[in-house]
Length: 329
Ligand SMILES: NC(=O)c1ccc[n+]([C@@H]2O[C@H](COP(=O)([O-])OP(=O)(O)OC[C@H]3O[C@@H](n4cnc5c(N)ncnc54)[C@H](O)[C@@H]3O)[C@@H](O)[C@H]2O)c1
Image (cartoon, rainbow, N blue to C red; front, side, top):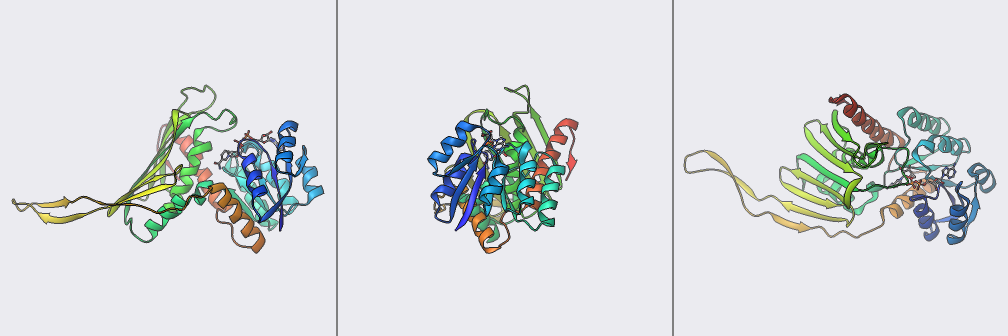
């Protein structure tokens, strides 16, 4: 069984520790956080050893794999320390705060032959996987547009990232995954509504070689909404990331001529199908996949390269806001 550890036990890291504790695929040998109370509490809850200093933890426990769940601005420092200790890592999204930092992580990992995965959790959402299948099997053929909403209240613990870097990056990665590539350009607008420090609302318009993607993100809507809708020539799909429900509307139309001889498209009622999806906790699926790749030397399902592409697009969206112009990707 793999010996695993978690560095950073805040909002997200706590759930990494919980899932490792609950799975039979790994043994949670240690946890680390600079906050003594949090560290002790997690160690008691998940029956493991606490460390205030993660470097001491790495050298004493010699884990086979580590989750890095510290604030984004610290990803580089912690990741490089793990890589130099030759420990495979799962780095929470986004890979880093800047492209330079992300590149350094990725290059150092390659040079030292250390596998890394980026925690783009929605890749493991069963509804997203089912949607990808609809596209691959052409049940949704010739996608013309994707519309995403990821809105809700402000997460007070985030102090080093704006709404684009922190949450739009999820949907940028998902659209890259669904559309098998990256956009050619991005145009974005953002602003500060309730927060004077960082942008807390934004809209992104991404052009994937003619396929339009529109992403709305914010930390101001009092209700949590996480939805993605796909329009294709032969149908339309509505995905809810939270409930993991996916509804497919199969188009029902014929091309014909009206009584004046003009060409028309006649629509009948669509066939509506609620897909049968087995709900699963995306983080659990992500961690099991990470462990499987470490154990069996498989390629990670979300690579550093993909994490870098998502970050690059998010940073270009920010540049687009600042310059108020379209930015090439
Ligand atoms: N995949 C997702 O859906 C998702 C959701 C939330 C956060 N995240 C990502 O997870 C990361 C952490 O976010 P969060 O919301 O959990 O933040 P957080 O502030 O709640 O937690 C960070 C924790 O790291 C600890 N820490 C700081 N420096 C440390 C160090 N040197 N050694 C050990 N611990 C240290 C802090 O004390 C804190 O407990 C960020 O990169 C964020 O983008 C991802």
